Amino acid sequence: MPNTLRILDSDTDARLTGLERFLEFWLGPRRSEYGEAAETLDYMELPAALRRFYAFAGRWPPAHPPWAANRFCAQDRCLPIEPGKWGNIYRSCDYFVFVAENQGVWEVATLAEGEDPGVWMSEDCSHRTPNPHWRALAEPLSHFLVTFVLQECIFSAEWRASEENALTVFENAGCAIEPIWLNGEFAYPDVRHSYVLIDGKILLRRDTGDGALDDHWYGYNDPIAAELLRRLKLPLTLQ
Image (tube, rainbow, N blue to C red; front, side, top):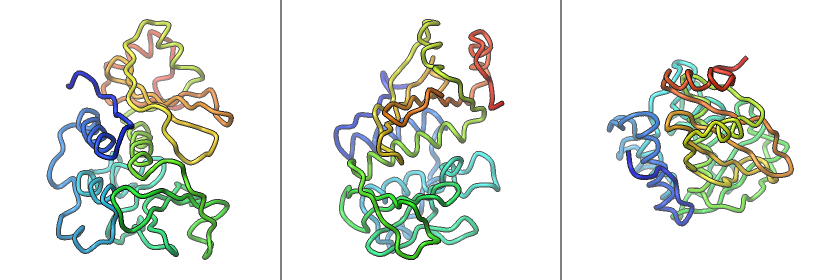
């Protein structure tokens, strides 16, 4: 384990390198078959940041097969490259759609070229509407990927739960709290997501902003973490 798992929000390489390092810490060592094959990606129009992510983790096995296409489909869906029952990445007007909300309420798109282009989110529509309105996000593609993938790490964890102000409970108990990703932009304009690691075993998301709730989502894969949750009288799983 490196001295720190914090993902720096400084440039494209720092974001993606930090994300790759965290995935191997959280999910275990990466295998070559967990990435999309180079010969498949060579025929795709993809921006460099998205190509790198799919090459590293586009086929990471789902936590709960057969209910997902890959590991990053537990809450919302990272669309696979190849067509299947879960759909796949596709063009919509000038955009390239690569993430879909779990009920089809919104989709996320980027451009088909460039190093680290912007990100757009459909509003009040989805794939069911032929001419969606796209809202531009403030941060680039690599920033969105980090925020999205960390969310999926929580929701695809072996155990997950939420509790109001759980982070404060951990802080008051003197737990080791390591910032992983701070103020990540995601689906809602007035909400930012921050992720912290509790005692090296529990990944927790804290939302801030005008539209944020006090519920703190967290997930863990090590059953030893349940002992801490019991001691602090926090939920072990979803109720």
